[in-house]
Length: 242
Ligand code: SAH
Image (cartoon, rainbow, N blue to C red; front, side):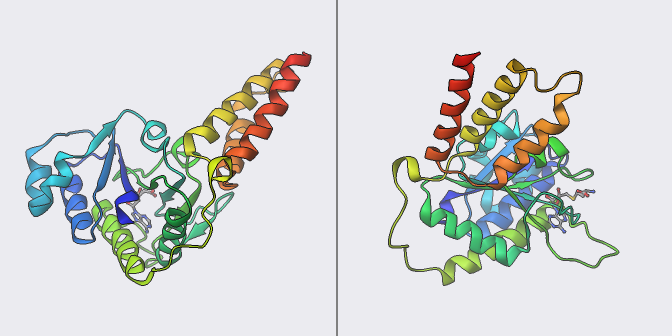
């Protein structure tokens, strides 16, 4: 089951952190590493810090954007060193592991855990692509872990929970009742934007703020494909009428 957990590292500055993260993953039986726009990769330092996990480094997938790295995932969990709770469900690592493993049992698609830049974490645009957040509780005076250390904590929780998770659920949603993938939610968001533009909803206002809120709302709601299709149908009918 853990083979469908995808660790996504965004715009990592230090290749040593990529290596250390790969090592942490290997210890905890995770294999899928995606790197969004890494500052230096491939790198001898990443390979050297990975030690026996060099296979994870060698099979790492490099992507240009977080959207591309998560489009095929059924659940995208962002990590945050801050307790930015507004609009997001924020879990601790233990709860996150239970959520992620339950998702893997009900959907045949990867679950992504997204880690941010060493200095600045994830941008608001990147957070808006996440369906929920996980925060590692810390000393309130020092909340930010090294990114590879954060990967270690999250990977450990996932591994430990996987040891406790046995039974498959009796019914697995099929076809259009399956939970939508991240890219399918993005497509609906774009369709909504198109129709809102067509009906001149925004007037002289900048669409960015309201579109960001709608994106966070859609991503939080974990729609099925059928539900997205209904919304597409409504939007298409509106476009026909215009
Ligand atoms: N100043 C940045 C800190 C980035 S730390 C910020 O406030 O976001 C680099 C990365 O390590 C984070 O993006 C996150 O992926 C991970 N990380 C560090 N501390 C964490 C914590 N307490 N909980 C969850 N993830 C954490």
